[in-house]
Length: 483
Image (cartoon, rainbow, N blue to C red; front, side, top):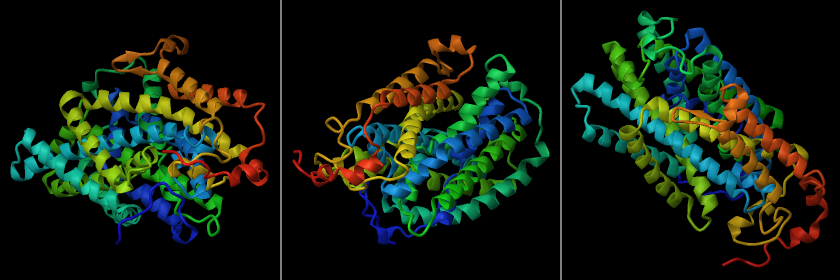
């Protein structure tokens, strides 16, 4: 299979040969991995019982999917990735906001996947062949996972899609075996080792779990969905079918692995750590399937995240090829894996990462969706590529390539979110207004969306009408190349 040559440029119609089934396959297959499974461990580690943990994950996933899934329709119309598409709202330079948010999201999840997958592999190999759990072992395993991940990401979308189809079947079978393996020790009681409710009360802790474990899953895809739907043709597949496929893929692809993580957390009594207890509680016959799940699943998920990172860095640095950008971010992600392993606890690192990125990413998603609704899904795909061609002009040029109202609105929403977040090592000053409950994603999305609506009340015709009438601007699209 040839290496993908496309970066964030517009995908020609003849290359848009994927369909809704492929979208479900890639969202399901790539998420059946320990990097997603481990999020199901968070609610038990917060001190919640079985039913409270399950409800927090289900509610968070459904709410997050309702917000995130419509973003898939944007790249269906623009034939490029979502951060580049957001140039319609933020400007062809302002869409760098989306590229940076997407880069950070994918970087964190890539590092987390390799970190957790590598830890389980070392533990399983320790029981199987006596591999010592020392720095050399972790370094070699992390390096092998990173190398395999880079190979898939560099070859691109078609290889990752084929891998996801295999993983959707193979990982489902491995997880089904895992349910049988861990079932004898399963309990629905809260784990006493967790030390009670993390935030002191049931509802604050349940809401934290809803955001950190449930909502964070779909939010991780706010900049990723377009990487796949840009290869689907709107001429052959309706928006409704694509939206339904996104809903199905996200819900199944997130709930199945996360609920498996919750189930095994109680069965393995994994209150303070997940990887170690998971391996220790495994019956001998399941160690090889567990090793396969840790390795293959991690490569599939991290490969998809690394692919997205390569696209986002390619969007930030147009002179860099997608392959070169992918190699660069792979090195950074691997460094983050070692930092996470040696300098942080899993619970604190995961909770802080997802809450911060959710607070920063939600207002960007809300503003982008408002713009999509306003222009009724009509974009000038050529005008979105101005920055990538190092040119000026076009209907999304705004002021020197930035739409100031959109950028300011995002900044306001992100700032409010960061001031209202509750982390293991930091509590925002706005928490006193919410009774100590972390509502950062709600406040950031609300403030960002309302600010954008207010600041653009008197704005001229939306992109749909301007694309049809402002022929002079479109004609000037590639005028004045930048050096």
